[in-house]
Image 1 (cartoon, rainbow, N blue to C red):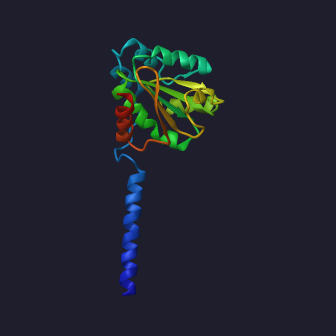
Image 2: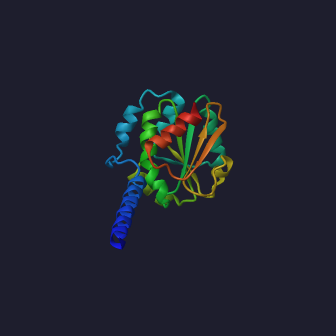
Length: 190
């Protein structure tokens, strides 16, 4: 009887581990290197305010909160997704492919902007060289931009603004898969 209970407990433990590992892995699609040139081609024909973002793909922009607020103002009429990230942040790195893909898929209707916060410029440049984005990120070493958009001090944070430029939602933590990010975009940007 004890042996049977031990075997049953072992099988249950293995099942829990398998389920946990599968959930932690997010999407089971194989990882492919993001092709920025192909993404830019797919985004050709976007409205001018969105095209101006695509023209600054993977750039780290200076200017602080003032420049960021001006950019947000120029995007009125379009929903905006702002992703706060840092090159040293493992969860930020894990969700980058999701933002790369959604920015290409939705980039002709939705504005995407990054905020590189609490990071050093050289590591951020190196990271963007290996994981490019089809939109720019604003440098925010002291998290001044993050404070103006109500993004807490943890990482990553995604902030959604509606078409009027009003804050709609703040998502804390990394997105694990495309469907969760797409669901939040549908829910908070429509």
